[in-house]
Image 1: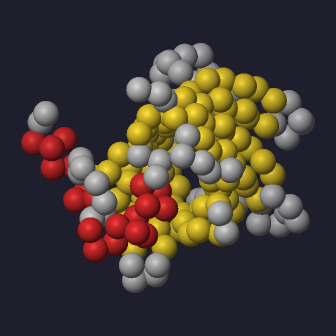
Image 2: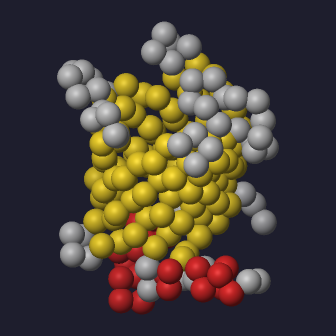
Length: 173
């Protein structure tokens, strides 16, 4: 392992905030996913994908990689486009929440959000460069599965619109 990888990766959560860090830490591992993209015309497209979560930065953060569709480099996924990006989720004890940055350089998509628990779910909220609102939620969370919803709302729109939903299953073994 290179020095970079050795210093980036961590074996577990930073002890002082271990309980708070489990909000996303419970996802550490490898996941297979079914992704459904929802068009404004009610069209739906489904593709397989994969997600990988790991501890980084002395265990003070959780980083993930989302690849949709699988394999990377597959033909364009209608509506949502192909994803090959990473999220850095950093717990900020000064606000008792998570600062979240998503980077997808292939599509030039970059998002900033704040994530917090909401009941049994996790909700991340932010704003796009054009002023639209984003809401990404982890729901139906178990040890071996979760449902992720990617929603958007134009500033003047009355309702949220489901853009993508992901059903993930932890890989066995």
